[in-house]
Image 1 (cartoon, rainbow, N blue to C red):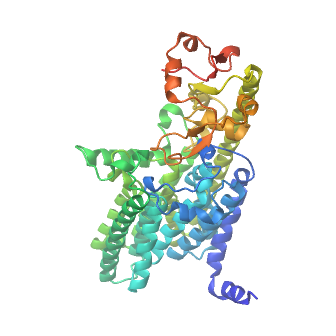
Image 2 (image 1 turned 135 degrees about the vertical axis):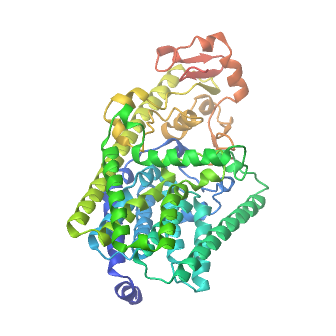
Image 3 (image 1 turned 90 degrees about the vertical axis):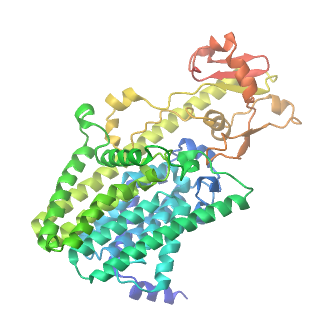
Length: 544
């Protein structure tokens, strides 16, 4: 039993694919195991202790299916290991596309893919990470199935299906496919191994695949919303304004693209805020990349082939726009780090060009630089996880202290809880000057406390701390009232409820206007929790 699988592994799986998979998986474990083996909840994690990821209103109509293999529970180890498996598969596809055989470069490719900050931030939302990593695999396969010279309609159809499903899982990974396509085409232009008509045919195929793929994605999205009750797109990240183009839209999108592209490498104005290791390494990388590209063009004599040289320059110019393609779809789109995994391919591309066109000594220096970047990305990831752990512990301590204070005040007559204000979610002072937190690079959002967003305080007290009011124990016939989580514009919370004695917004609004609440000090002051009539009022922060 199983001999067929063994034979397939031994005879059909290339050694280079195996090495790519193992490098990504092992390096991923070394870098991210801290996250996989600890309870490091983020704000959204509170809403996704169990979540079906049915966020069709955000356009991710295939995400639930993509996440179903790991169950709909937030299981850090299961989700994490499955994510690494998908990244390993993506690494194998990428090295196959670039025809990488050098074992050192294969190791670097796996390491770059699995340690890039976009992956680290995705693991902040680990309950959905495996789905997103599957999107990376599908994006890579989009390119693999439609390489230059591919004429089989079945393969081109598979490419179309892959990009459609990629977008249906997470729209940002369309950029991964686009940048990978551009990088692959640039390497082929340098090699000049095909007839010109094949380049033209490939460009035509790409236009058809991506154009039809996006059209199919949109049609399926609209059908899915109708089938689930005539839903409308939510306002999350500008998804509801896709296609709505106003005055100056194109120029604004160009400016946003260029600013965001520079920020991926520089993070901020380092002349004002100071250098970090991340910025220094990226400055060195950009200098090396410029040298590598110029050397490749010179040694390949690409500059003598004017048409192909023009295509090469157009590909280079198109890369920032491919990375931030969704700026050109909606004025409301906001990019976050986990949407920028496609940038990682630029480091891999430079490694490919260095390996092919630089002399051994210089290519060794390029490999060393990429290795140091991988190591620094790994260190940065663990800094982020350490800070997440600290935030969770601080939040848990806050929750237990609040619950204890409430139990001391609870005489069995209090029916509901009112939470006024929120704790601060970001410490600018700590970020600017303390604890080396500037080294978090792209992962620069500092979450001080899980009591700092929306329904999180009540949800944390209910689901993590397990707070109960004695009124419902003394009167067991009184059912704890349901609470509607957040608003329907928040994709992880629309329509989800849990049970907690939280007063409704009308009661809360009326209380906030009273002098008694206005005079209450803010947590953790002794009187920041008070009993008013049959309500327990917790004042976490001032209301503007």
